[in-house]
Image (tube, rainbow, N blue to C red):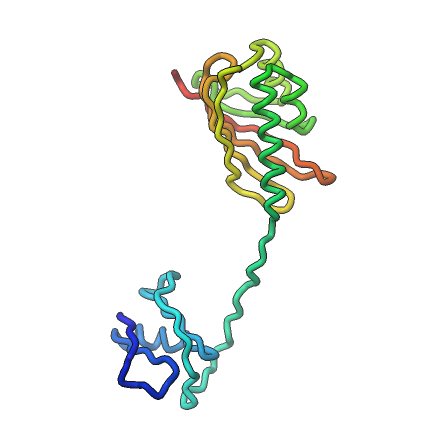
Length: 195
């Protein structure tokens, strides 16, 4: 199906010439509601063209108008920054070798699970605190922090990490929850890379 302007119909505000099968034409015709035409190709959800049209007085629509959902931003930018700040506390604690610094980022009941040297390890976040206490500082650590998902009360942050205290590289996935207005990591899932 192709959709083009039809210059021969100069009397209408905007006119379209729709070329294609009758079935597809009928599908597009049904989308003409309230003077707005949105052409959807091949039944997919991708929008090909949006044109302002005068409603055809000879066509009576029996279909209900589709109402667009509100286009509201659900989570303010400040919340993204607050989530990243918590993940950064974790990284800063690792860099300085501070158990207290790492602990600031985590809920007291947080858990962690992941693969270290090919074996699944997990349990209380205290295992991470013991690791920091045993191995100390990670002055050469480099990281990239990305908010993968966020809602008003939950978030997921990916921490791409190189050169921790034992020189290992990791991907951490931190799940955060907002309790009493404060973001805390409630779970850490990780993968240690070989190297």
